[in-house]
Amino acid sequence: AISKSATATAAAAAAATSATSSEYGHNGTSTGSGGLEVEAFVHGALCVSYSGQCFSSEAWGGRSANRGQCAQACRMPYGLLADGVIKEMGDVQYLLSPQDLMAVEQVPDLILAGVSCFKIEGRLKGPEYVSLTTHTYRAAVDAAWDAMTATMDIAEQERARRGAAFGETETDAAAAAATTLQAALEAGHAAVLLAPREQQALEQVFSRGQDGEHRGLTPGFLEGVQHQRLVRGRSPRHRGVYLGEVASVRGTAATLTLAAPLRAGDGLVFDAGRPEELECGGTVGSLRVAGGP
Image 1 (cartoon, rainbow, N blue to C red):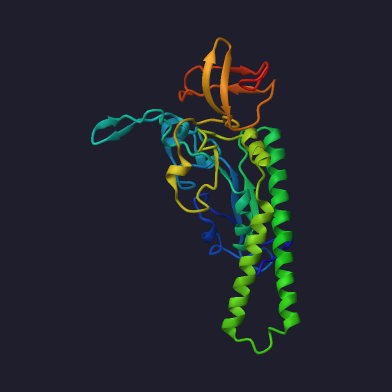
Image 2: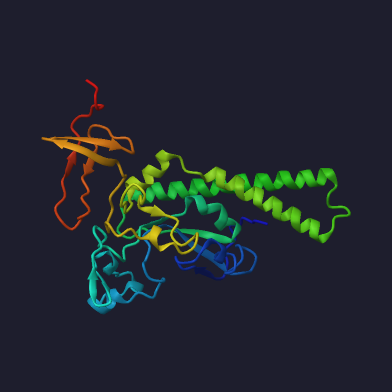
């Protein structure tokens, strides 16, 4: 079952950002039941280390990450030393720099797991980031809750109409409850599915996009450990929306194969895979379709 309450609890615990969705359900119970209120990070920067166990910032610069002073050593370029030899990694230099967390589409799973508070990381972020992310997750929580509770209410009404509770074995009741929860979860997932424009808005306000496959926002560890998806290693900072690839350049004009909308007046940067160097970019003056007038 799922419950929703505004009652305060005596204690709360923020689970590590390295926890999976299924692990949250083992950490506490929902608000108001006398158990431990569980908080989960759902959006923002991810630490490459297990939460609270990275001491590189303090060791190298005297700034404690556990006191909000992280110098972000993970966002620096590194070389990979294998058997005493530096391995050639191409454009992969930021080996410890994860992409950011985005768990909008995991909200129903976290609700069912008993998470009572969704946390958004916002260190050094601007007001646009705060406004967009809080609005997005508020809408997702409400949409998921409405869809899931409506599905469960309909299932219970149908069982009552059929008189299913009478003469039902314990095994049958458990199977019916599991079927109802699965239906509720599917309804919740459908309710929070992001439209392309919504995904792009979150990428635009802050994302460490790397290429067309690694757009900068990931489920983090919520779906388990998938290091190759989490760390691409091409860039350590905010890149915005991935636009596409450069097909050709002639003078001050560039021909692009677009993967996202582009308009005159938009700002863009040409990513050559060397973010530590001066990059070319600017404001789009005009656009025309290739082969058109």
